[in-house]
Image (tube, rainbow, N blue to C red):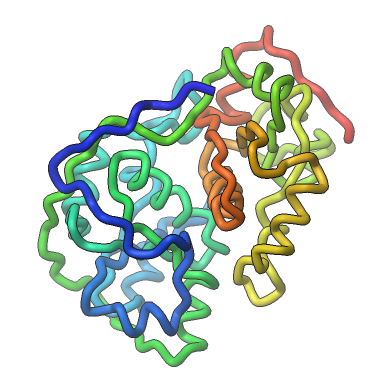
Length: 289
C-alpha cells in the first residue's frame, strides 16, 4: 500500500515511549512536561468547547475536530484530512512544540483523540500518546480539573510531509483482496440495516467488521495486548498482514489503527472512508454480513 515517505524536518521529535497509550497516573507524573490536547467531540453533536470550559485537565488546550482536524466536507467525504499548514497552525495555537511530548484525550472512548494523534504522527511528531480511559480515567485517578479557558503559549510545530500509510478510493478494493480491509463502524451500519449519517447503507466489498468499541474493556480502557491480538487474529490479521481501515468518515478508523499499533501491527488509513466511497455511485456496495 502506498505511504507518504517519512522525512526529517524542523521540530523532529524523539520517541518518548513505545506505547501509544498513557495511563492517568502516568499523566499525573508527566503533566508539567507534556502538552495536553482535549479533543472532546461527538458525531452529530454540539461542540465540545462548553464541556471543556466546565472542566478539563489543567493546562490542556481545546482542539475542535471539525475545524482543526478535518477539511470541509466535499468530494473526499465528511471529514477529509486537513490541509497540513492549516493543521500545523491549529496545533501551534494549541501549544504543540516539536520537542515536547503530547498527550491527547477526549470523553468519547478515544475515538476523536485518536484522530488527533494520527495526524500529529502523520506530520512528523513521534511523541504522542492517548490517555487510556480518557477524561473519566483522569477524574477516577484523582486528577484535578481546571475551569475556563487558560492562556496557551503558542508552540512551534511544523507539519512535515505525510508519512503514515494511507489508501485512496482506487486502492481500497486491492486492500481487501491483498490483505484485510477493516470496517470499524457499528455492525448494523456495516450490514446496511441502518445508516443514520450517510445517504447510502452497506460496506465496501471484501471488508470485515471490527467495531472500534470492541477495542475497549468495560471500564473504557483499551483491552490488554493479548486480547487485542486475539481479536485481530480472528479475522486473519497477524504480524506481516497488510491491513487498511475505514469507518464512516475517517475519524474513528484511527482508533482501530491505534489498537493495531498496541500489538505491533501497522495499518493504513482510508481517509475518505464510507462517506467518501459512496460519493461515486459506480462504486460497488454490499449489504448483509
